[in-house]
Structure formats: structure tokens, C-alpha cells
Amino acid sequence: MKVKVSRKAHFNAAHRLYKKEWDDAKNTDIFGKCNNPNFHGHNYELIVSVTGEIDSETGFVMDMKELKDLIKQEIEDYLDHKNLNIEVEEFNNLNPTAENIAVIIWKRLRPHISSSNELEIVLFETPRNFVTFSG
Ligand SMILES: Nc1nc2c(c(=O)[nH]1)N=C([C@H](O)[C@H](O)COP(=O)(O)OP(=O)(O)OP(=O)(O)O)CN2
Ligand SMILES: [Zn+2]
Figure 1 (tube, protein in one colour):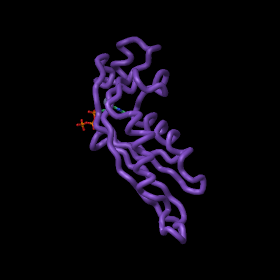
Figure 2: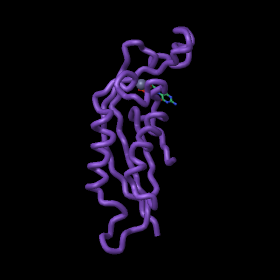
Figure 3: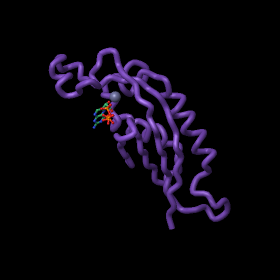
Figure 4: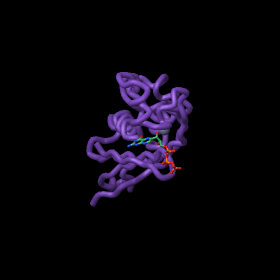
């Protein structure tokens, strides 16, 4: 019997969506206002979910305190109040779209979650735009 436990988190970050190989006209055509060369920001809302069997001794799938500390250490401290294009090395050559940010978050958390548990990332870039990645 598998149960999913989830923890919400939050970070603010700036980004610009563009491809350096494309000229300004094409970047504006594809990315619109998200191609603003002066960057723009989002209040990202994150839901991290871990699915697995309930431990018969603790009653936990995973200790939520442990999950909270892990998200703070690996995600909030790493991304909060950052310019993703400039300050986060994963985005040196990768567009910081919601899809790519969700994958980076998954990759940073995965090594710290028991291999017998599944990990799912839901990332809201705006109140109405969100992406889901489960590996
Ligand atoms: N597939 C994706 N499409 C878009 C992404 C993305 O990451 N993946 N990102 C953007 C922009 O960065 C931004 O998220 C869009 O902002 P905005 O248009 O303001 O967002 P909303 O549509 O939710 O705002 P409304 O107030 O509803 O207009 C664009 N596309
Ligand atoms: Zn944006």
C-alpha cells in the first residue's frame, strides 16, 4: 500500500527566456515578454511529493521534517532571490523555463530520497502556469 506525502515550498527568482544562437527578432517572436533583456521575476510555488510504503515502526513514508530541511538546503537556499540565468550554473546553457527548473529541482533532491520511494515535483511559475515532473 503506497501513500504520497507532500510538502509545499516557495522561492522567488529572476530569469530571462532566450536562446543566444537566435537573433532578437526570433527570441521576441518565440519568448515574447519573457525575453526582456533586463530579466523579470516570478514567485515560484513548489510542491514536492514522495510516494512509498508506510514504515511500520514510524508510521512515516518519509519524515516531513527531513523533507522540509532537504528542500530548504537543496532548493530554497540554492534558488531563492537568485537570477537563474546568471547565478545558477545548471542554467548557463539551459533556458530556465518552468519545465527545466522542475527537472533541476528533481535532480537535486533525488539522491537524498530513499530509492524505494518515488519523487514528484510540481512547480507553479504563476498562479495559473504549472508543470509536473516525476523522473
Ligand atoms: N511551456 C512554457 N511556457 C512558458 C514558460 C515556461 O516556463 N514554460 N514561461 C513563460 C514566462 O516565463 C512566464 O511564465 C509567463 O508569464 P505570464 O504570461 O505573465 O503568465 P500567465 O499567463 O500565468 O499570466 P496571466 O496573468 O494569466 O496573463 C511563458 N511561457
Ligand atoms: Zn518568466
